[in-house]
Length: 252
Ligand code: NAP
Image (cartoon, rainbow, N blue to C red; front, side, top):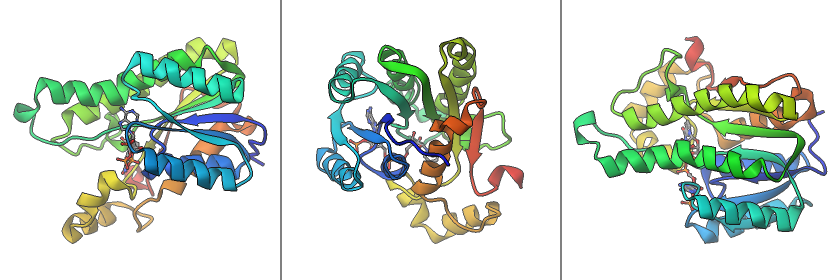
């Protein structure tokens, strides 16, 4: 079940954290994986080497997902190496925090350009090399809005992640006749460089744990497992959905 043998995948922001976990989970299921990064070449090289050791093909590919020409160069490289793309995982993202009066225009643009425009650019470019039966998985967040969770002081981040859910719902309608499924995943609190600072504060960490029925912080492989399911043939009837992988946070 959930075999991805012979499939090709591109994971954005796969040099670290959740993206690295997704790349390894896809490889474990048999997919060949292109490992995108923005600037952390050394870490991306390591992830591609780890993936290759699992008996599938892998290569690192630099691109800033918020830059259209970078994205088009990345897709050309994926086409040259893999021929076609079966699975796109839009994972690359940044977070910023602060009260609304302190959010400068440049910071707003950086968060929205990376987290939302970046996903749009990757989808638009990937569709040119995506086979029928393709799968697109977009990483949102429990901070997406509409699910009863508000963190406060992350207005730009929340807006970008809500935008991802809307993007996915709209594109599901357009892409279904082309045989392409698109879904979002909304992670809860997951161990990564993005959350390390918060989680090293024991008070903040225990506050999170009180909110999580599963009683633990999530791991990148928790998200990787959900991506493997959504990328599989078995998820053929799942499109336009957002799967929250949060240890039960939203249920509480
Ligand atoms: P992370 O540890 O900070 O890793 C971020 C990754 O994104 C890195 O690989 C980074 O590449 C890449 N990246 C950043 N900007 C990029 C750009 N413009 N172009 C290409 N790559 C870029 O973050 P994470 O926690 O793994 O988060 C991954 C995704 O999950 C993000 O979309 C985040 O919003 C979402 N998420 C995370 C959590 C959580 O609790 N961790 C919860 C909900 C949602 P470099 O290494 O080259 O810088």
